[in-house]
Length: 219
Image (tube, rainbow, N blue to C red; front, side):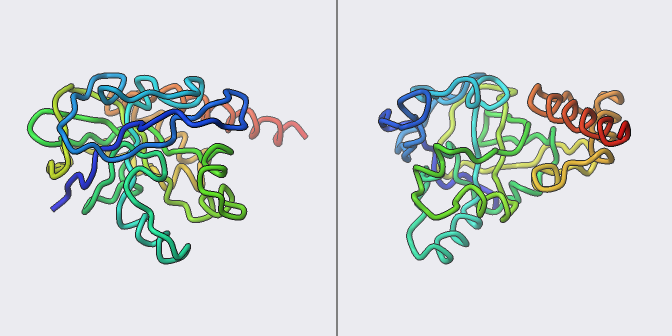
């Protein structure tokens, strides 16, 4: 059964050497049920609002199966929240989810998969592992950001049910590791057909992809 193993929100803001000066990456499991709204979990915050949070990144989900692979490789525990995730999942292929796929969590909450997580320097400092961003990127299993389609209560043990898939075939993992013109075409065709609404992060990535392609063709 696909389920939520832990719901995590910020424990405390920590000093950070980045441009913001603090980070909210210190997420930890909460025992009680929390309310989920369009901007995320009740009581959760983001320090760098330019790159984290907002309606398109209201929640970050990471699969326990992938966390356990990292735990074995790094020879250290990867408890829920260590990667800054809000939801530690089990039994669902988070990285195999299509952009625009919708899940029901528990009896109330409905979320939509919007885009993959892009590892950053804050994540590197958090983990204190050599070349962490490079290694995490090369693994190609980044976890998924989610928007909130329907608000409600959420808690550990809630079942996850896939409600719909757009059918364009572009997954979190495939876009993260190999975004190309063919995938961009598939996403835009799906949007034109009304099966998905692309978030700003995906639109921006497509624009950059097209721009790079034009530059190459002009040479």
